[in-house]
Length: 130
Ligand code: HEC
Ligand code: HEC
Ligand code: HEC
Ligand code: HEC
Image 1 (cartoon, rainbow, N blue to C red):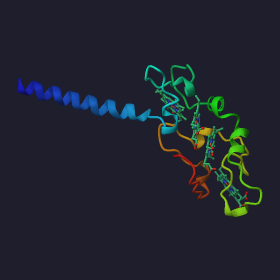
Image 2: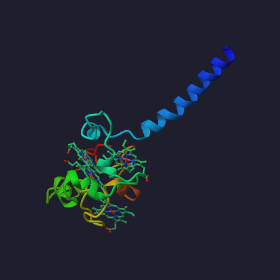
Image 3: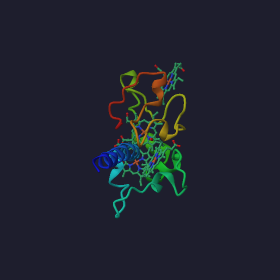
Image 4: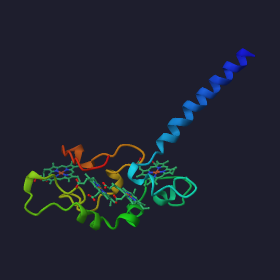
């Protein structure tokens, strides 16, 4: 009996250990949590992933549905014309890529965001919510 019980709790422990990280992996950013949660308390994956059964990295158009076009987003983070080198460049309208970079190159949803530019640069972007 005792043997069975400990086998049971071991099984439960393993199941728990496997299930919990899988659930955490689909955690949302704080800034999206509320708006992406439906009345049933479930996260609306479709808001970003569409209806496809197999989830892939969301298209820019999914983000644009709420945030406006890439140009609109670039306008939000426009730097003063006379800022010069004292200010880090607009991440949404850069020298190399203009406004063409996919949002998900920097903004991650289920893990920490990164700055694509920092493969080559060392920008800090202190205002970015990671
Ligand atoms: C259903 C609408 C909706 C969709 C789809 C959506 N967002 Fe949002 N997002 C919001 C709202 C609302 C906020 C909180 C208010 C705000 O800061 O604009 C927000 C906040 C953010 C912020 C934080 C803004 C800040 O203040 O720093 C980022 C970054 C962001 N979203 C990026 C994205 C990206 C990237 C995608 C696509 C993968 C996306 N969002 C899809 C509605 C949406
Ligand atoms: C090259 C990296 C990068 C890409 C690509 C990128 N962002 Fe950002 N985003 C940032 C950084 C860095 C900030 C912090 C704002 C700043 O430094 O002015 C930011 C801030 C934001 C904000 C908050 C703006 C504000 O101040 O109100 C929103 C919303 C946002 N991004 C959405 C998007 C969406 C939507 C896309 C795709 C169309 C996108 N971002 C593409 C790096 C990026
Ligand atoms: C606010 C937008 C947003 C919502 C809502 C969202 N995701 Fe995501 N998802 C992303 C982004 C952006 C990525 C790209 C990688 C990352 O950011 O972690 C991604 C990546 C994924 C991936 C990996 C895809 C690949 O090909 O690498 C899976 C699986 C996934 N999401 C599942 C889900 C599930 C399940 C839900 C609902 C519980 C959900 N997502 C809700 C934005 C979202
Ligand atoms: C693959 C490497 C690489 C990536 C990724 C990259 N850059 Fe650059 N960047 C460079 C190199 C190399 C230079 C210097 C040569 C030149 O001016 O074209 C440069 C120059 C610049 C300059 C001009 C520097 C100055 O002092 O005037 C700016 C601004 C800039 N990058 C912004 C960005 C931003 C913003 C991103 C992300 C959206 C980014 N870069 C991504 C390699 C990169």
